Image (cartoon, rainbow, N blue to C red):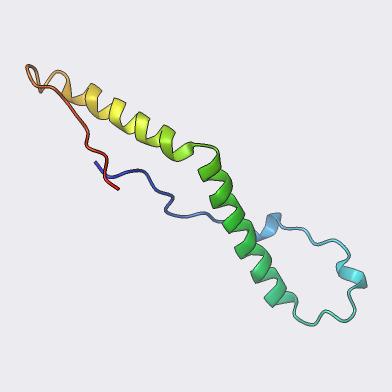
Length: 85
């Protein structure tokens, strides 16, 4: 069974707020800065998700779910999982 992975992390641009935007008179690259901020926020979200142990929890839950589904069908067999790296 493949290990859990983060397939996407997106940040709603409407949830990003900029402080001091009105006084930044020399900042002509607002769109470029917004894109950079969104990419950094998404990268931070991925890092925080990994640090929280969400992937380990997903792996444990998937194994438990599959074992539960196969227990009645695979009677007399031992269900084992080989970790893929």
